[in-house]
Image (cartoon, rainbow, N blue to C red; front, top):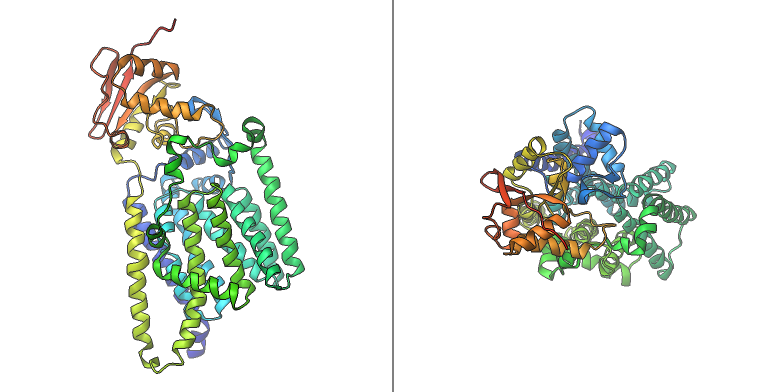
Length: 500
C-alpha cells in the first residue's frame, strides 16, 4: 500500500484539485441566470452551426446585415456537445471544464521545470484561481476557455520533444489554436522571443524545436490568410486593430495601474515571477524557464502595440507568473529545508495556503462579481421581442446588448461589439449616443430613420451607461411603448422625417 501511495498520490491530489476548481466554477455558472454579454454571440453561432452546419459569417442580424470573419473551431466544438445536451447546459458546463484543465497543464509544466511534485501541485491549485482568468471565464462562453490551457499545453509539448508523441500533440495544438482565435499569435511571438533569448544566452536550440517553431509561424499565417482574406481585401491592414470606435477605445485599451495589475495577477506570483525573470536572465540559464519568460515578453509587446486588450494580456501574464512562481517555490523550499525551522514546515505550508486564499481566491471571486452581464429582465425582454416583433426589424440598444438582441430576440441590432469591417464606425457610435441622450425629437427620429431602426430597447444598462433616467424626447405620438418590465422598456418608432 505504501509503494502504491508513493507512486500515485500526486495524481490523486491533482484529481482533487481539478474537481475543486471545476466545482467552484460550476457553482457560479449554475447559480447565475444569464451569461456575459459577449457569450450570446457564441450561443447564436452554436445554434446556427447545429441548424446549418456552417457559422453565420454572413450575419443578417449584426448591424442589420454584414460579413463577419472569425475562426470557427470553438463554436464547432460547442455545437458538437449541443448534439447531445441542451444549449444552456453546454454553455454552463463545457467552457468551465475546458478552462479547469489549466490546473493539470500547470502541474505538468511545473513538474518538468522543478521536478518537485509538492510544488507542482501547489502551482496547479493556484493556477485555477488567477484573478484575471477567473473574472473573464466564469459564466462566460469565451474562446479563451479553450485557448489558455491549450497554449500552455503547447509550451509543455515543446519541453518534451524527446518523446516523439509530444511532437504530434504540439502540431495538433497549433492547428486548433490557429482556427480558434487570432490571439493565438501570442504563442508564435513568444517562441520568437524564445529564439532570441536562447541565442543571446548561447543555449543550443534543438533542430526539432527550430522546425516546429517555423511550422507554427507559417501555418498560423496561412490559416489567418484563409480566414481573413476577404477582410484584408475589404478593410485593409487596419482590420488587425479591430476597428474599435474611438469613443470606446479608452475603455477597451484602458491603462492598467500597477495596483490593478497586482490584484489581477496575484501579489505573491508577481513578486516571485519578477525574481525568477531577473535570476534566469542575468544569473542562471534554463531553457524551460526561458519559454515562460518569452511568453510574458510576447504578451507585453502585443499590449504595447495595441493588438491585445489589457484584460486579455493580464490573463496570460497571470498564468505565466504562476508558472514562474513554481520555480521560485522550489528554490525557497530547498533553502528552507536547510534551516533550523524544518519542524515547522507544515505550519509554513498552512500560512502560505492562507495567503493564497486571500491573495488569489478571494480577489478572483470579487472580480468575477464585477463582470457585467445582462439582468434576467433584459433577457426576458429580448425573448419577448422574438415572438412579438416582426422579423427583419432593427432594434436600437447599447453596444453590449447588441449580441443579446440578435441571439435571444432574433432581431437585427443597431450595433454590437464586433466592429470589424463596419464603415464609419465612429459616426455610428456617436449617433447611437446622440439617440439616447438628445432632447430633440426631430434629431432622434432623423437618426433612427437614417439607420432603419424601428424599435428602441431602453434598459437599466443604457441608463447607467449614458447617465440618463429616461429618453427626453418621448411624450409625442411618434413613440409608443410596446413592452415594459422593471428594468427594460421597448418603444416603437411611429414617425418618419422627410428629407429635402
